[in-house]
Image (cartoon, rainbow over all chains, first blue to last red; front, side, top):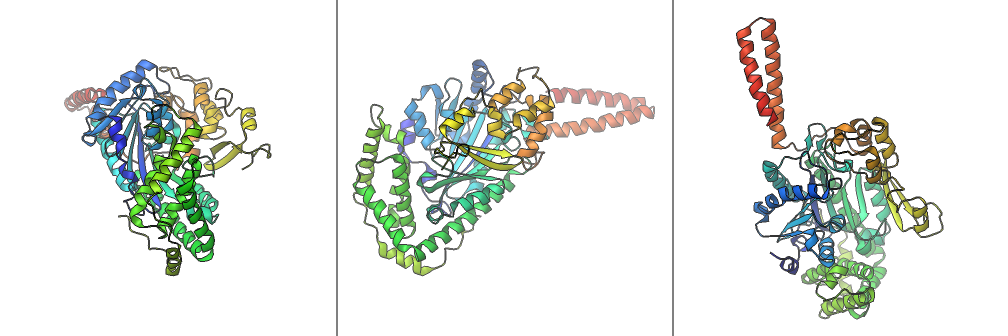
Length: 374
Length: 163
């Protein structure tokens, strides 16, 4: 399978089908593994990396989960192609910088992606839509177990799986979820939530952008520690915290509807206006406005059946996605112009925000009961 | 957001550090981050940056001027990159890493998944321990026939273990 056919389909995790999908965009779990008695990729010489790559790659490609897959050596991918994979979270930024000696293998559904010779010999990650950390872990755990039949991983009975960076030693697992939290941001409660979560050994960061500034009101929450706790315990703890954040986000939205409905209507109307008529738009502006439209949709101002076209724009307006179809590299100004054009085209037949629906939502009062994710 | 050091320029470099298990965030402007050597990985201990201030010192404590005998990795390399050379480095630098891991993680011992192979190794090691104990007992009791048979079993098991 070639990259174009992978890219023509949107990743399954983007389809907003999983539980709590109105707030949790996606869940992912990655495992770090290294082959025993081999230098970690960052320390090994080129030949050592190539040897490990040869040992691992065919075994990864032969996995039943990788029957329909895309596999590439990093040096064979163009800068734009690598960036597209980064924007889809299929490879890390660090992996995109790799060349000879590294590779990536992913399945067509984009629910499983395996990086070879990133910081560790193997970085295997599974992605699901909505809050499905348990299910994502199940898949990547299964893959790990089948690879273990043929590969002997660096493992110490006391320290667990040994990784290049001591922050990953033990389970080698990082579980994370991408959350859309416009309610908490608009009501200025987000810093409180971030601080509270950081205190209990979990990390929250803006998905794009740095520090507390989160473009598109998108946040990633993940476990910080990997040693001294079982995989399923980590996942249960993280899931519980995310469910609490979901509740807080629902509460914040209700308060906004009741106390600041004019501000909210204004924001949604402005976002719609700018997205529909602008001719130049930075990626930051696009993400922030799309976030407001998404919030409007959650609150009933737009018909539910248009949700996917908005969710898709979050990815389609990213710099490399804009350029993947054009022949030459575009400069920032050309990208901003093209981005605005794509958004305008998409929103041409998009209905105007129905603000009266917002008031109706506010009348409902309580937030929807949390779903059980079993 | 303003730079935490000069408090006048906008921060452009954001560091998150874990110090004694607590997360700390430092925001720096371009000039201050250069001054502190954050953008120059050779001047600034990346280990400190990645693993918390003191990480590089911590690892030095355990093994002064130690070098991995096989891969040649040294504590200076760890200080620079915050990464280890290969799995054996966890043994070479065990002493320094111990307190680092303690500060960084929830516990000091792995309680999660065990690879099938390690399961087998644990079982074989258990059997080996029992056989050795029985052998000592047999020798003490001057039961040489049993001892000889146990010795053979141990030899066979040694073969399995090295595989």
